[in-house]
Image 1 (cartoon, rainbow, N blue to C red):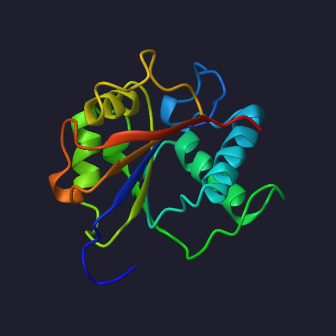
Image 2: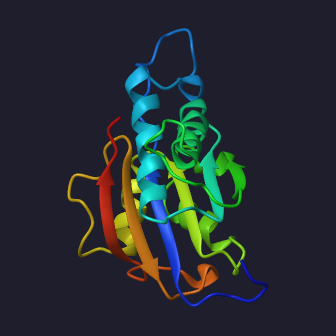
Length: 179
């Protein structure tokens, strides 16, 4: 990264990986990833590395399943499992309580606070907010049924993070990570 704002920006939206089913004795915030979810999240990280989409900044909900998703994505980006790739410099990771049960406008506010020098941001959050944010950024090309677990949507924009808004970041790629 440089000290000046960049021209091209990439926002990668990732719905958290598959979590265990809710139980009566544990709050929703504490639901862990299922075995499949851990493998899928690592596969998401490997896909990001293979496509040179390594984040400068990670915005992650504070729920256990999103934190575990990030950990597995990070492992996949570094080559653990072996199909991953070199992860490059460590990103700035911000665990955001406001990303849990967030509306798309709340998630957009988090993205707008990102340093202007960041070129690639990874946002890991929950439905329906993450799907609705993708739709807000590119209303014509968003997935009609929203994001499934471990779905990645890559949005590209020339708009500064602080000015990002409706229709300002077209969808460049989609991927459903399965491990």
